[in-house]
Image (tube, one colour):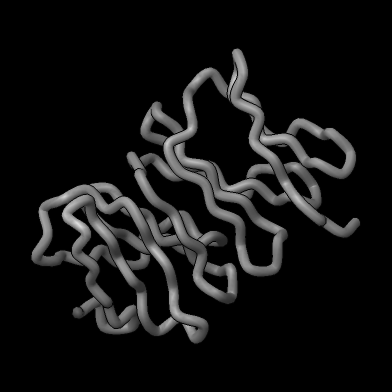
Amino acid sequence: MRITSTIIVALLLPALVRADDGAVLLRTKSAFTAFAISNDGKLAAVALADKSIRVIDLTTGKERRGIKSPALSLAFTPDGKSLAVGNTDRALYEIESPYMVSVWVGETDQEIRALAFSANGQLLAIGDPRQAAQLWHVPTGRD
């Protein structure tokens, strides 16, 4: 099955719905706080107001990973194997592992509102409400 697009329907009950066939992939009572799709279009990550994150396989509709963490921003690594999570902390989680890969400590104590990886996955750009941006070297966790 080819995934061409995915939409979020947030009416009475927030839900993740596959656009091509209308399949409901995630239905929740908790509002969405962040959303990301992997580069290959096969995975979606949804952060919820209940301080959980769910990684959904868009081709099967099954949950691939659950993470207990608040999140204001999400970004998949270019290879789709890990997920960066931003709130007042920054963390990197492997999709196929129950463990957190790393936590970055930086100069900002602001909420992380934007995350984006470089094409090679070596750098992570982090943005906060002060319109400050930082670049992190992913392998070392240093700016």
